[in-house]
Image 1 (cartoon, rainbow, N blue to C red):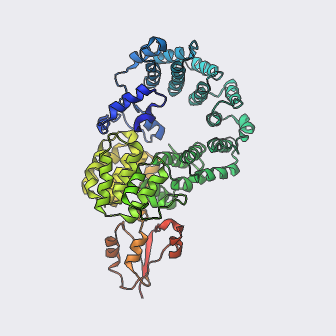
Image 2: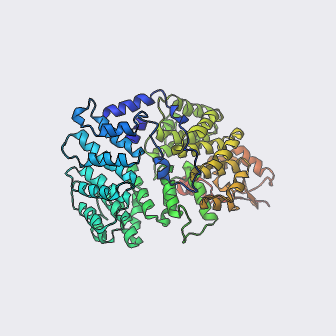
Image 3: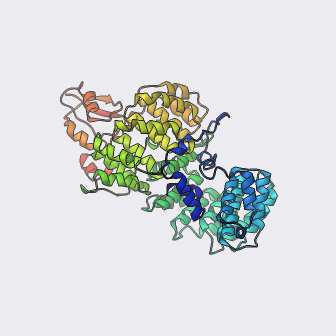
Length: 563
């Protein structure tokens, strides 16, 4: 079920309640209010976007702080539904206060029960204390968390390690206690290694080195990133690139997460082309280039701007699919491609979108299948929705305009990737009616990915008002992109089938390409040129046939020259 990720650790009954709230009401959540009233900061980190009331109004809205405190103070054996206790512990993360802190501490320190429900309640209590970041009773919280490191419940020990790193606890005795957890065989080493790096525990480097060749690639990635962060030795980072090419989505995700933590700029190109979610990749890229401020060793130039454009535009032909192909007519059928959009592995989703773009563009029957499948869902499929929105744009399916515009306008901030995808697809289908929304949302949001998408969309529809507005933007990255004279022509991808249809021969002048998206537009562009012309490709045709160059033209110009 799509929503379960928001309530991780909840019991069967809780999941059933969530399912009942969502079944047949997949659009109901869109009316959730944007966080309002206060001035938006210049830049908002991805994790803050998600944590800002994420789920507070979506699940158990009647469970306020007072009721949650009452429930967490009740033993599970005294409750009709013992899962309510750990649901209450989870819920209290939305209510940072001294009263919530006291209730959570009491739950963690009560070791009288080993019932599973009570174990989970203690874990969730520690997690909520971590979200409070030591704002209340800091010393007592740290003391309690250090004590939990010795718990016989390995999951309690793990979440205590995580919470201590969230609190920024760096006292020598705390670091020693966390470092000692690496010697336990029953805990997740990845969590411990990442936390030691965040605590800047240079004394732990030698112990962490043991895991550089660990069989578990996620653990190996955490060790590589930690060694780089703690020692500055980037020789180890080559190993993380191998994991980016893993066929396992979770291993690729782990690699991106550790590159993000290390802020390892040389990985920029590799991350952008990796088949993982835009949310994960954009967060990594932003940390690499600089969050609140541009990193001092980074030069802003057209090349960097192009890379960021490609990240946000997110054409499936720019993604490294690791040699995965659809090489039969059945594999390239519309139905098979639509099914791939709903695969939780982004590699398969991008493959489905890529084949739709290559084989079925401007095919209204294909667009109708994509749209009908989405509308038939009884819940909002978080993972698939983004790829569905993007696919409707690649298919240039005009009847999807209403759906895309509705989602672009109404999805709450934590669905910023979906909003960005809908925005760019509206641009792709040429939705003039969406232009005012591009301008309005682009000016109002503090989410850089969404702001960037609005800039691309508005300009590709011929409106440069956002570019002018953003030249004084408070976010350095948006301001830098708006001040760059570079347009967005390089986002044009000309399909090889179109090149064959053009049948151009010979030589002449350089023609700067506008947003060439259809054969008709390309013909119109070249119709003013001499009848005999030659289109120069970045790679020889035989290399495209072999899959080299990923089959698209990504330079700033098409070279056409005459006799």
